[in-house]
Length: 403
Image 1 (spheres, rainbow, N blue to C red):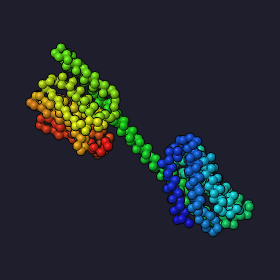
Image 2: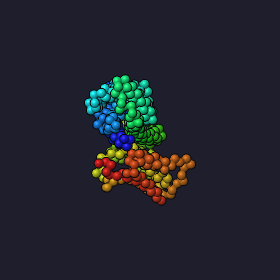
Image 3: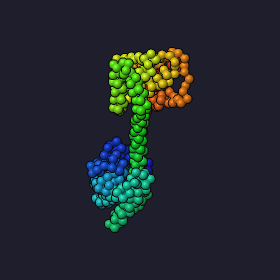
Image 4: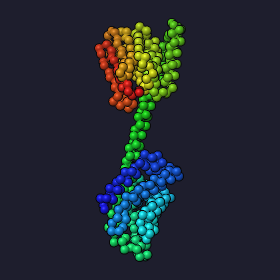
């Protein structure tokens, strides 16, 4: 009997886990929801209770089944009314399958299970989400209904089969309690895992936003001061170029303040070129030359916003500025087969000593590498190739990500 009921209990408890996938029942497991969600819990428990009644077996003339699992699940998720509906419905269905002398007490047992479990769910809501407590409560409630039904049968003189079968009733009690506890335990594990994944996703989004904000803050005060100084110096010598620089600066900050999460790679390149145009005005046309090339197939591909910003900034600060001669920064974007973004800086002349205070190129690139990892996982890579006259940074993102 123990083996057969345990098998039936496992089947019923496994089927009950559909509740985790059904939004109204998930809300009830988490302690929320409205009347419609409670009604859904009642109907769901009623269906499980009827199914559990069909999974019964007969021992010494007494019928034993696992319908109480559905009644308890309805009560724990929906409260006393849901427990009453499932208990009454499941009890009526099973009562129709037994003799008329036992039928009223079968119905009484089911209703007692539903009402008592529902009252417990209202009075002790935390217990509903704790499998060991649910197991103990299920044992206690079933013990109550066994005692009540046993006394009632003794009073009316129909206890000749019920009372001697107490070992089988004990087995049924344990199996039903284990089924309900198994449902609660697995449901909580699944929901906890989803909650953790959601929290991780939010944390990654917050980290990305923090990285964007950090980039914007780095540009706002110091870079703006240098840009305005460069524009002021250019106004007297070349007013037309000064107007172009003002337009570049406006475009640069418009892009920063728009707070995009993702942007076409073409926009990212335009933003980087605006930045480099201002740096070129500050350093001098003879000191910095900029080249760019984008494959037509790659122009519309969406990438994380400000992806290029730290790369071109490092190319200027830790590349061109470290050499006495002229330098070239080249931005290339290809889309065959992966999206490949390259920023290369080469310089002429003697290499200058590093300043005493140096933030280091590695910090910005490591931050960008972590950002790519959070967004794309192992499908994106960032490499740095340091050379005698410069460096090459390459970002590669698997093309199938954008399909």
